[in-house]
Length: 268
Image 1 (cartoon, helix red, strand yellow):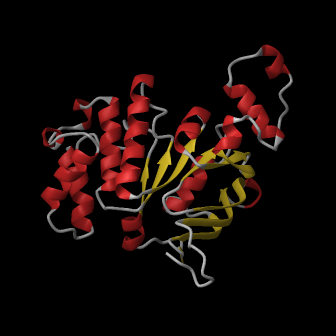
Image 2 (tube, helix red, strand yellow):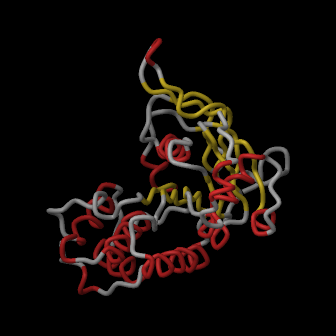
């Protein structure tokens, strides 16, 4: 997509995003003046410690939080707090916990059929079978319940539910952190294969820098609700960030070192 100025319109653009919970003196400002752009086909990472605001940022983009201000644009179109059907045909989210994000009393078939019916897709049965095949599960999984699936299979179903509407953008909130280590690489490789096959754009939230290094071209580092640095993955791999908080985060990721921990600063 080409913008009016002749440049390429970002898949997602976030400008001066603020998110607050509560009101008045009791209000907590969880995200502060966050701005970034994500190009079509890119995997952009949001990295930081727990409580840094990265998942809250993702939820604001997804339309799951009302208490935000600033601008959010998807495919060049600014979105309001109330999202349209077209928005959800373009952008979907995969949540962290495959155990909690799937309805325990719904079959896989129902979980995939309901959004297709709501958005008035044709050939629903064929679309369900194709989507299950895309995520590496056969038609035999259609009528199973979540309790009949392994953790990795549940996350594949969560990905299938996001993909079934044929969006071009997926928001990935810690998509492997609830899984066994042996399964995590399978899901990450599946996501990379799906991205190549369907020309998807990803925004990936994680605290795991190894996942970022494997998946992302660029990343934003967040601390107490703010972006402190945006860097490309080569800077990450070469351990060459510019902000002291990012350097500290990288040091922490290399393993426990009592001397390093003793010297860590508190930022924010």
